[in-house]
Image (cartoon, rainbow, N blue to C red; front, side, top):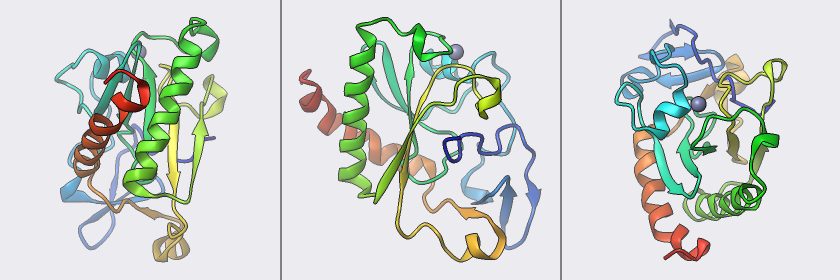
Length: 191
Ligand SMILES: [Zn+2]
């Protein structure tokens, strides 16, 4: 499974200590992550809702290109954890139209360039969870891009098998929206 791809979706966080809540194996600073209280928005498909700017969903979309958009993961495993998502509701890569396949790969390359420039991670996990036995928590097809950092194994991992999200997603969103707007049109040849 792509790390963090379940991310505690739908789970109720329990109180821990020091103003933090424990959600699955993630520790987050409670007052900075009001949206990630462990409950799903009341919509049929959260990614269709993001595509349609549904106000019931926290919109972390970063960039639109052709039939795809790039969004932050609502339950990030690491800072800069992205997803590339088709606008239409499909559930398997085999449902992509032939011209969409290279477009998705090109957008993946652009996303990696943007993340390299902005976050300088030491590596990435990139991929899909397909089908109910895969650990996917959202049916709508999404390609996960998880930056990995050499320093990410820290005190909390060792102490409690938990992780600390070190950047508020709203900050990540603003950083990456700016970076995509600056870099993507040139890289995609659309600027
Ligand atoms: Zn959908």
